[in-house]
Amino acid sequence: MYLLGYDIGSSSVKATLIDAATGVVLVSAFAPAQEMGMIVKQEGWAEQDPERWWYYLREVTHRVIQDSRIQAPDIKAVGIAYQMHGLVVVDKKQQVLRPSIIWCDSRAVRYGDKAFQEMGAETCLSCYLNSPGNFTASKLKWVKENEPDIFQQIDKFMLPGDYIAMKLSGKVQTTASGLSEGILWDFQKNAPAYDLLDYYGIPAELIPEIVPSFGIQSEVSAEAAAELGLATGTPIAYRAGDQPNNAFSLNVLHPGEIAATAGTSGVIYGVNNQFTYDPESRVNTFLHVNHTPEQTSTGTLLCVNGTGILNSWLRKTLFTSEKANASYTYEEINDLAQAVPAGAEGLLILPFGNGAERFLKNKQVGAHIAGLSFNQHTPAHLARAAQEGIIFALRYGFDIMKNMQINARTVKAGDANMFLSPLFAQTFATVTNTTVELYNTDGSQGAARGAGVGAGIYPDYTQAFTGLRRTRAVEPETALQDQYETIYQSWLAELQVQLNRKEI
Image (cartoon, rainbow, N blue to C red; front, side, top):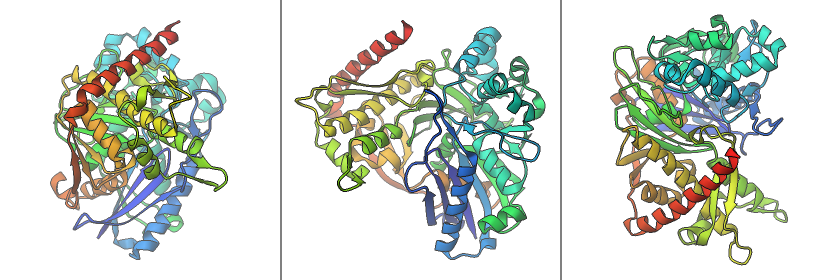
């Protein structure tokens, strides 16, 4: 008996098949081999074609079934994790009307800011726990105002994971957790954010059917089964945004627990049992996957857009040999960075080159390199300064969360992405003064385990984490903490310079 999990990211689509009884991974596959591209028509825009997600999902599904050599009927449930905050719109024939406006697209900031001002901060924060900001509801408002012909054709709007579930089942559905991440959920009324939709002039009929995060939401259709090689009727039993799902994959379900990830974006995600919010909406609170009307469970999320994408940019731009037609591996870049001393000998990087940053009040600061010396600094210094700059940005948000009484001495993360770098993991632990526990999991594994819970194969959450194993723990390097604090203060001063320029 097996469970299949998908993780629909903005860089790749991954599928993992696990043995339900042991929790052991049989096989995983991801596509494409290089990071998936984005459609960037203007500065600050970021779109992707949803059909590309489906194309790569088809590829990885075929590969995991072929490589595992199992029979499709032995897959007893499917789970879906997905990039958060994106907008997919379809007509009555379930045809996509335009490319998806994805999470790092900044075009809707002014609509969210105007809503926050006109509806009132008190109303928005008490009802939605966030400013409408640059989230899914505001992106839909942008379509209404700028593409009225397309808006008139919309039958339903969806998040990226909802689109994948629709392709699998033929049913258009969403979850309360998903709506909350789009600022489409009223926490006081425990219902969709009808008042915000009314303010934006968006008909409530565009909201899909709401299903639980865990449970038999739908089944794989005959059409999708034929296309993917799955069995018709396989239950689709779980879906969640990538960061709530990352927390779930690490068994982070209780108040006070914190999960982190450092993929294309970097995230710190703290679980709480109250409806709390940041008055400046720099970090954001959503419904966690295990929330129920009877037991409150929320996740407060800090997101730094420019994380792994900065590392990828450096690799493609600076660490490429045209003669050899090849790039350094990330492991080789990490080794170069490791050889440079802490602080990269005065080189500082602000990693904000991937759209407006929510924790900087939706300012589009851009990436900056400060203190560059042509006679001293090498690509290795840039590699180290990039990792440190990402960690400093996460620390900045970590301090905001502490002011919301979200404190932790331990942070859990998957042993993946930038945490594969020993330097990154060690520096993160040192700068945030936390123990970093790394586990043998990722988003697609979490989606598979979630499907097991939703399908009733696991009677409780505890059983779902059979096979989850801590691979290593990284303690703060106390001898470097004072030095890093001084470097961090210099980084903060450079950040303030750039923020002041944005105010002019």
